[in-house]
Length: 215
Ligand code: AP5
Image 1 (cartoon, rainbow, N blue to C red):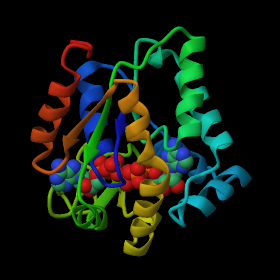
Image 2 (image 1 turned 45 degrees about the vertical axis):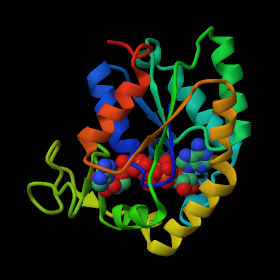
Image 3 (image 1 turned 90 degrees about the vertical axis):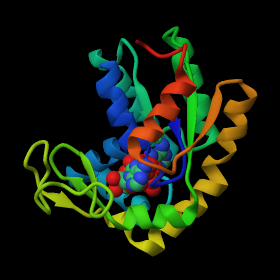
Image 4 (image 1 turned 45 degrees about the horizontal axis):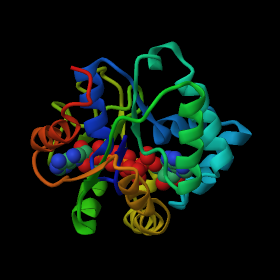
């Protein structure tokens, strides 16, 4: 599980690790954005929270995660990215894993200071087709506005406006940061510095999971 504030690089790292280990990245944010794109009543409800930087209600998120984890590609393991976001979700995850006789191997919290986060998020561009991530300065695509991987169009997320990012940081501090204590007490947590090149951050994560990760 990758924990951390918005813009810490969870998605970037989860994607790299998913390729390395051959297991899926399960991102509650990506699952929610897919629902929002469908333009259903549920999608409009989710968007009304996301656009304000608030957490989407637990029941909707838990249903999406449950459906995703039942898919066959998740049976040999998965990387959780951005889920859980509060203690209620963490407890629901624990009982879900128990039910299937699974266990959480490791929780890595990626720590990045707020001002660096605002810089990162304001330059982020995301592929509308495959969700690949870029940064206009730190990790630009070869052709501006076009995904290197699939040729899809790159867009800026609605919730990446500076004011919304600051709200998301407040929500992280109030609701998600307590999970550091929660997983710390379970002996599952390692905190790593998320500042530096993406390959350096990846090495820190790999060394934190050393011994429990799939080789
Ligand atoms: P979600 O999609 O989960 O967003 P987030 O947690 O706010 O995280 P981000 O996706 O913004 O950042 P990230 O840590 O993945 O960083 P990234 O790799 O993109 O959630 C969005 C919304 O959905 C929430 O606000 C909420 O409303 C809702 N939601 C989601 N999950 C929920 C849940 N469980 N319960 C309730 N509501 C939920 O990197 C950021 C940028 O930095 C990129 O441009 C990247 O290229 C760049 N970058 C990455 N690493 C580095 C580096 N080392 N150096 C320089 N730049 C870097």
